[in-house]
Length: 168
Image (cartoon, rainbow, N blue to C red; front, side):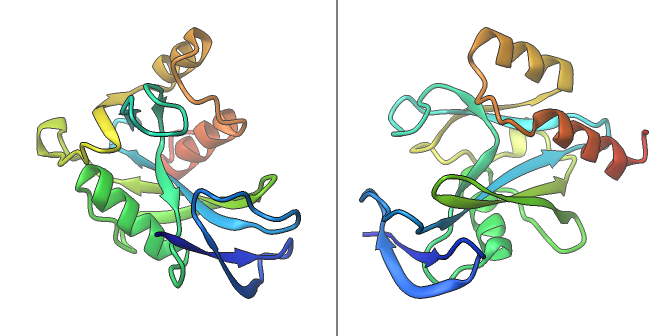
């Protein structure tokens, strides 16, 4: 039974927890992370969700997940990236690039620089069916085809990646 810390609309912990899978009360929020590994070519490591996950099965998506009670955004970034792909996030290769509030969660978005090969990845079979390096153009095409989770901030994310790599 996974427990989440509950935050208020100002991203302050309420001292309450919530059991994953149950409906959150109005005005309650939990913490989620999205992680974008990027390589020195500016490609983004994306993953195809297994057909057995509850949210967006079979879709290509960013790496990510919900923070368990007691974990902050940084800890959750490290855990999710390691659990799902076998990649180590460090303070030297990672940066928090944005955070936003959704209807029932706060989402922390991370960039993690890595030149790991696909063969080096350790995919979590319960969550990840496959992974690949993709260009921005390829991701936009996947979104048009309806096989990519269409994150509203995608163009802004691409801008941040270019800025981070110094290719602007």
